[in-house]
Length: 95
Image (spheres, rainbow, N blue to C red):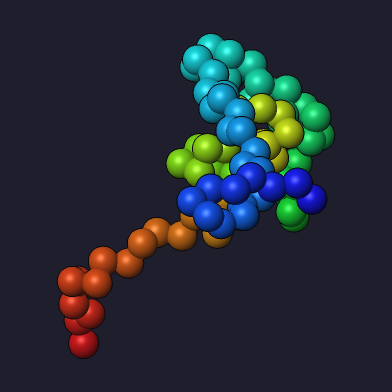
């Protein structure tokens, strides 16, 4: 494997980042409909047909793209399970 010498240390070549793809709202709505149709209007985890959402496999915050390859149909329950609500550590439990 070829590498580059940087500051006296051999390091492997760094892959160039691809530009982040984020669609405008109208284009995203069309892509969302395509993903839902492509997934047969079913949650790809449990097969549910209601409360469907399109989920980014790699979140936008981690440079996930608005591209069909990075999107999957999930029901609200599985979508919520992939994004659990952060617990506020300063909140006190009653009891």
